[in-house]
Length: 476
Image (cartoon, rainbow, N blue to C red; front, top):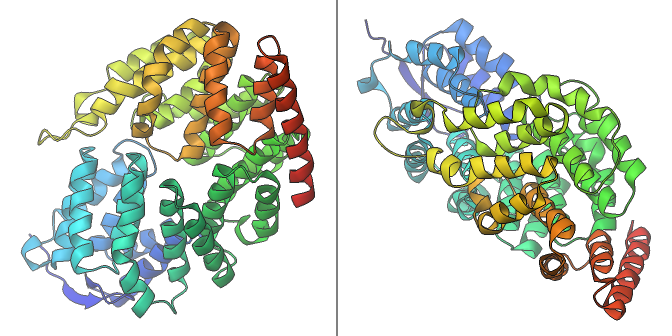
């Protein structure tokens, strides 16, 4: 039989069906937790489903939140879909029909179809927090920087004019700041992000957005100071480990190796974590250390066990690349089987049933080759890395993530060039000093490469490195 529910409005005046208002209140609170990267939202939406197993938006949030966590379609998501099958769609408001459509697309890994459904919701209901969050996450997974920015820009004026007194508005500002940073509007991004943190000092995402600006502009001393000054506001956040990862990048740029390793031990990986984002951050940090020959002791072994449960996920090639970093470092015998599993992932996992291709071409064109290059880097086959990565590097944005996160792959390319092709290394580092002109690490590396090519340029590069180290230390 089909269940009919009454229609109400949530805390942001968006239509929602429910049999009990308590379910709506729990969902509102869970949604605000998700936006603020805080608390335990799953406890709240799971409680709403205990009260009413057929609560439409409770099931959609439960299933979608899990699928957007970077894991394959799970029993939880299937249970939510089964619960939703008992609800009469003819009596649902437009917003919930489209959320249901997006959820079905997401289960089939049809990310673009899900994004279209959420965008349709936001045209009519620009204050639908779940649609705002979900579509922004999907664009992040697709590496679509413009839509990461513009999906927020399209709803921003409504929030600014009608809801600017709500605490969640700072989260909207932080999301917009991040999109602006990813599309190189650094000045505007920094201004907006700092304003958001002033409004809500515990806004982890806004603090994170400013950190990205400082990273992209290689304002190293300011970056360390910013992450330390805001640490009290986000240290307990779900995003806390990731923000500390940003701090560690600034420390590595300053050659503060012991400080960076301490940050890893106490903030990035103080204990085991099942969260994909935490695993990605840990592997990303350790791999940067590996690229530049920094001894990390047994830290890889502390991370590998939590990765092994994801060997057959193959949801995002971005995640798989970080898993490959770990396998190729401390479980080399598993690299080839892992690559083969990437190539033979079930078709339905990557291609939607309606023929709309999502992750499949990304794996085929970029993801598999990238993981293969990582495996060969660990074997010291730098020629293979160069042959693979040079044509691939302009396509890396397709795997998702941020510019700062993907930079590790560019660093791997540079390191392989240094090891096997000095002409290419000089060219790549010349390019890199233009993009990161305030980076002591880049100038030092450039100086080393130029030592046997142009002594004068080498000396100037080393001098530039020392000047920057001194300047960044004074800034901090």
